[in-house]
Image (tube, rainbow, N blue to C red; front, side, top):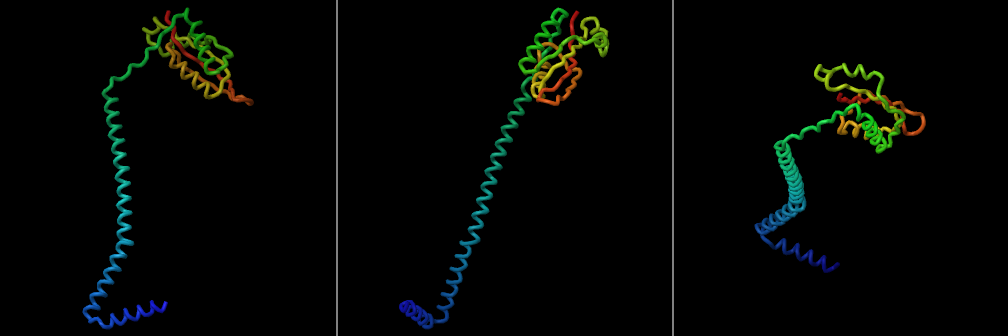
Length: 198
Protein backbone atom coordinates (compact mmCIF):
# COMPACT_ATOMS: atom_id res chain seq x y z
CA UNK A 1 0.00 0.00 0.00
CA UNK A 2 2.87 2.34 0.87
CA UNK A 3 4.46 1.60 -2.51
CA UNK A 4 1.27 2.61 -4.28
CA UNK A 5 1.22 5.94 -2.39
CA UNK A 6 4.89 6.55 -3.30
CA UNK A 7 4.23 5.74 -6.92
CA UNK A 8 1.27 8.12 -6.96
CA UNK A 9 3.39 10.89 -5.46
CA UNK A 10 6.14 10.22 -8.02
CA UNK A 11 3.55 10.39 -10.81
CA UNK A 12 2.26 13.74 -9.49
CA UNK A 13 5.82 15.08 -9.24
CA UNK A 14 6.52 14.05 -12.85
CA UNK A 15 3.28 15.66 -13.90
CA UNK A 16 4.24 18.93 -12.21
CA UNK A 17 7.69 18.93 -13.80
CA UNK A 18 6.26 18.57 -17.33
CA UNK A 19 5.74 21.66 -19.35
CA UNK A 20 2.29 22.97 -20.12
CA UNK A 21 2.38 21.79 -23.77
CA UNK A 22 3.33 18.30 -22.72
CA UNK A 23 0.47 18.29 -20.19
CA UNK A 24 -1.96 19.29 -22.94
CA UNK A 25 -0.72 16.53 -25.21
CA UNK A 26 -1.05 13.91 -22.49
CA UNK A 27 -4.52 15.19 -21.54
CA UNK A 28 -5.64 15.11 -25.17
CA UNK A 29 -4.22 11.58 -25.53
CA UNK A 30 -6.12 10.45 -22.40
CA UNK A 31 -9.38 12.02 -23.64
CA UNK A 32 -8.90 10.35 -27.04
CA UNK A 33 -8.24 7.02 -25.37
CA UNK A 34 -11.45 7.37 -23.32
CA UNK A 35 -13.46 8.30 -26.43
CA UNK A 36 -12.04 5.36 -28.39
CA UNK A 37 -12.82 3.02 -25.51
CA UNK A 38 -16.41 4.31 -25.24
CA UNK A 39 -16.82 4.05 -29.01
CA UNK A 40 -15.69 0.42 -29.00
CA UNK A 41 -17.63 -0.44 -25.90
CA UNK A 42 -20.99 1.00 -26.96
CA UNK A 43 -21.32 2.37 -30.47
CA UNK A 44 -19.42 -0.27 -32.41
CA UNK A 45 -21.10 -3.02 -30.36
CA UNK A 46 -24.53 -1.65 -31.34
CA UNK A 47 -23.41 -1.33 -34.96
CA UNK A 48 -22.32 -4.98 -35.03
CA UNK A 49 -25.68 -6.00 -33.56
CA UNK A 50 -27.49 -3.97 -36.24
CA UNK A 51 -25.40 -5.60 -38.95
CA UNK A 52 -26.22 -9.02 -37.48
CA UNK A 53 -29.94 -8.22 -37.54
CA UNK A 54 -29.68 -7.06 -41.14
CA UNK A 55 -27.87 -10.27 -42.06
CA UNK A 56 -30.68 -12.42 -40.60
CA UNK A 57 -33.25 -10.34 -42.49
CA UNK A 58 -31.28 -10.78 -45.71
CA UNK A 59 -31.14 -14.55 -45.16
CA UNK A 60 -34.91 -14.79 -44.59
CA UNK A 61 -35.57 -12.61 -47.65
CA UNK A 62 -33.35 -14.87 -49.77
CA UNK A 63 -35.26 -17.93 -48.53
CA UNK A 64 -38.57 -16.24 -49.31
CA UNK A 65 -37.35 -15.32 -52.80
CA UNK A 66 -36.21 -18.91 -53.42
CA UNK A 67 -39.63 -20.22 -52.31
CA UNK A 68 -41.36 -17.67 -54.51
CA UNK A 69 -39.26 -18.69 -57.51
CA UNK A 70 -39.98 -22.39 -56.88
CA UNK A 71 -43.71 -21.68 -56.61
CA UNK A 72 -43.65 -19.63 -59.82
CA UNK A 73 -41.94 -22.48 -61.66
CA UNK A 74 -44.53 -24.95 -60.32
CA UNK A 75 -47.36 -22.62 -61.32
CA UNK A 76 -45.97 -22.23 -64.84
CA UNK A 77 -45.55 -26.00 -65.14
CA UNK A 78 -49.11 -26.61 -63.99
CA UNK A 79 -50.42 -24.07 -66.50
CA UNK A 80 -48.55 -25.78 -69.31
CA UNK A 81 -49.93 -29.22 -68.44
CA UNK A 82 -53.09 -30.21 -70.27
CA UNK A 83 -56.17 -30.09 -68.12
CA UNK A 84 -57.41 -33.44 -66.95
CA UNK A 85 -60.65 -34.63 -68.42
CA UNK A 86 -63.35 -35.41 -65.93
CA UNK A 87 -64.20 -39.04 -65.57
CA UNK A 88 -67.22 -39.98 -67.65
CA UNK A 89 -69.88 -41.71 -65.62
CA UNK A 90 -71.48 -44.95 -66.78
CA UNK A 91 -75.22 -45.20 -67.17
CA UNK A 92 -76.66 -48.50 -66.04
CA UNK A 93 -79.44 -50.54 -67.59
CA UNK A 94 -82.54 -51.67 -65.70
CA UNK A 95 -81.03 -55.14 -65.34
CA UNK A 96 -78.01 -53.69 -63.55
CA UNK A 97 -80.00 -52.04 -60.73
CA UNK A 98 -79.43 -55.01 -58.36
CA UNK A 99 -75.68 -54.73 -59.06
CA UNK A 100 -75.86 -51.01 -58.23
CA UNK A 101 -77.62 -51.87 -54.95
CA UNK A 102 -74.82 -54.34 -54.18
CA UNK A 103 -72.16 -51.71 -54.94
CA UNK A 104 -73.88 -49.18 -52.66
CA UNK A 105 -74.04 -51.85 -49.94
CA UNK A 106 -70.33 -52.68 -50.35
CA UNK A 107 -69.35 -49.00 -50.08
CA UNK A 108 -71.56 -48.65 -47.00
CA UNK A 109 -69.89 -51.66 -45.37
CA UNK A 110 -66.46 -50.20 -46.14
CA UNK A 111 -67.33 -47.02 -44.19
CA UNK A 112 -69.27 -48.77 -41.41
CA UNK A 113 -72.60 -47.30 -42.54
CA UNK A 114 -75.39 -49.67 -41.49
CA UNK A 115 -78.05 -49.73 -44.24
CA UNK A 116 -81.50 -50.37 -42.85
CA UNK A 117 -83.39 -49.97 -46.12
CA UNK A 118 -82.45 -49.40 -49.78
CA UNK A 119 -85.17 -49.38 -52.41
CA UNK A 120 -86.37 -47.45 -55.47
CA UNK A 121 -88.36 -44.37 -54.50
CA UNK A 122 -92.09 -44.15 -55.18
CA UNK A 123 -91.85 -40.86 -57.11
CA UNK A 124 -89.46 -42.16 -59.79
CA UNK A 125 -91.88 -41.18 -62.58
CA UNK A 126 -91.63 -37.51 -61.55
CA UNK A 127 -87.89 -37.72 -61.89
CA UNK A 128 -88.20 -38.98 -65.46
CA UNK A 129 -89.74 -35.78 -66.75
CA UNK A 130 -88.32 -33.24 -64.32
CA UNK A 131 -85.43 -31.23 -65.83
CA UNK A 132 -84.80 -33.46 -68.84
CA UNK A 133 -84.78 -32.56 -72.53
CA UNK A 134 -86.79 -34.49 -75.15
CA UNK A 135 -83.62 -36.26 -76.33
CA UNK A 136 -82.90 -37.43 -72.79
CA UNK A 137 -86.44 -38.72 -72.28
CA UNK A 138 -86.04 -41.26 -75.04
CA UNK A 139 -82.64 -42.61 -73.92
CA UNK A 140 -82.52 -42.35 -70.11
CA UNK A 141 -84.88 -42.56 -67.20
CA UNK A 142 -84.02 -40.84 -63.95
CA UNK A 143 -84.42 -43.26 -61.06
CA UNK A 144 -84.60 -42.22 -57.42
CA UNK A 145 -83.44 -44.50 -54.64
CA UNK A 146 -84.21 -44.10 -50.94
CA UNK A 147 -81.61 -45.18 -48.44
CA UNK A 148 -82.15 -45.29 -44.67
CA UNK A 149 -79.09 -45.99 -42.56
CA UNK A 150 -77.30 -45.52 -39.24
CA UNK A 151 -73.94 -43.75 -39.40
CA UNK A 152 -71.55 -41.34 -37.73
CA UNK A 153 -70.74 -38.03 -39.42
CA UNK A 154 -67.23 -38.95 -40.58
CA UNK A 155 -68.28 -42.36 -41.88
CA UNK A 156 -71.19 -40.76 -43.73
CA UNK A 157 -68.88 -38.22 -45.36
CA UNK A 158 -66.53 -40.94 -46.64
CA UNK A 159 -69.48 -43.02 -47.85
CA UNK A 160 -71.09 -40.15 -49.77
CA UNK A 161 -67.75 -39.06 -51.27
CA UNK A 162 -66.98 -42.52 -52.63
CA UNK A 163 -70.57 -42.96 -53.78
CA UNK A 164 -70.52 -39.76 -55.84
CA UNK A 165 -67.05 -40.61 -57.24
CA UNK A 166 -68.12 -44.10 -58.34
CA UNK A 167 -68.05 -45.14 -62.01
CA UNK A 168 -71.83 -45.13 -62.18
CA UNK A 169 -73.74 -41.86 -62.10
CA UNK A 170 -75.11 -41.48 -58.57
CA UNK A 171 -76.03 -38.11 -57.12
CA UNK A 172 -77.36 -37.19 -53.69
CA UNK A 173 -80.66 -35.37 -54.20
CA UNK A 174 -81.64 -35.01 -50.56
CA UNK A 175 -79.99 -35.75 -47.23
CA UNK A 176 -81.54 -35.70 -43.78
CA UNK A 177 -79.61 -36.52 -40.60
CA UNK A 178 -81.59 -37.19 -37.44
CA UNK A 179 -79.36 -37.17 -34.32
CA UNK A 180 -79.86 -40.07 -31.92
CA UNK A 181 -79.99 -39.46 -28.18
CA UNK A 182 -77.52 -42.23 -27.40
CA UNK A 183 -74.24 -43.10 -29.10
CA UNK A 184 -72.41 -41.56 -32.00
CA UNK A 185 -74.54 -43.08 -34.77
CA UNK A 186 -77.29 -40.99 -36.36
CA UNK A 187 -80.31 -41.93 -38.41
CA UNK A 188 -79.72 -40.88 -42.03
CA UNK A 189 -82.26 -40.61 -44.84
CA UNK A 190 -80.75 -40.14 -48.30
CA UNK A 191 -82.47 -39.70 -51.64
CA UNK A 192 -80.15 -40.83 -54.44
CA UNK A 193 -80.59 -40.20 -58.14
CA UNK A 194 -79.22 -42.26 -61.01
CA UNK A 195 -80.02 -42.58 -64.69
CA UNK A 196 -81.08 -45.90 -66.20
CA UNK A 197 -80.83 -46.56 -69.91
CA UNK A 198 -83.75 -48.27 -71.58
